Length: 183
Image 1 (tube, rainbow, N blue to C red):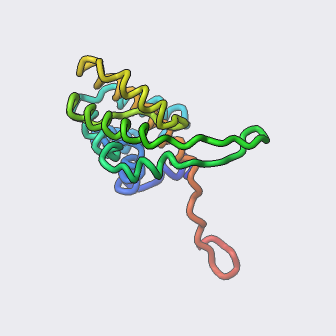
Image 2: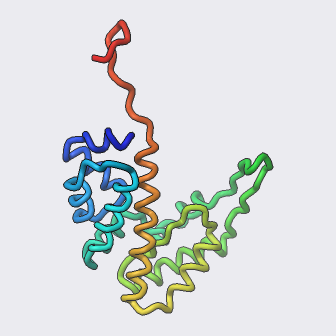
Image 3: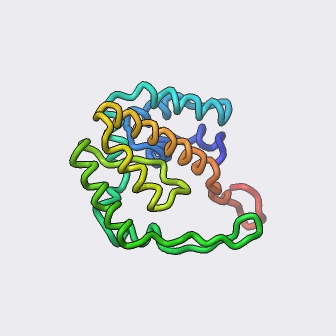
């Protein structure tokens, strides 16, 4: 979807698109109302500033739109299954997470939620299960207000990635008549 298409969406469609990026209804409402954005930089800057004004309830609402990592061990196994890919022309293998790491990650997430009252939020892009576990355990000693602030910062990173993906999505094909003219 191009920025111009995002700007032209009706309010309901824009609300749906922005909700895919961040689950805070206040943030979504502000994003919908701020359109049209003159540039992608303006979109990202406004998204950051709208998020920075979030209250505790807004942040927690956004967190509720994320899956609970520790709730389903099978989902963890699938997420961190062995994969192979190419990087700079060379084959790079990503090692699978051990069963012990997955069990520790599951328990760590449950312990985190019990301590802080919300799920563990981390921008997981490119992170292994081991890295996520290390981050989770490292954040368990934070004071609740400090941890909420850190988690909110992670949510901001996730939102930016999702906004970028939204803008990179292919636009639906334009409707044409039998002669190929736009209808």
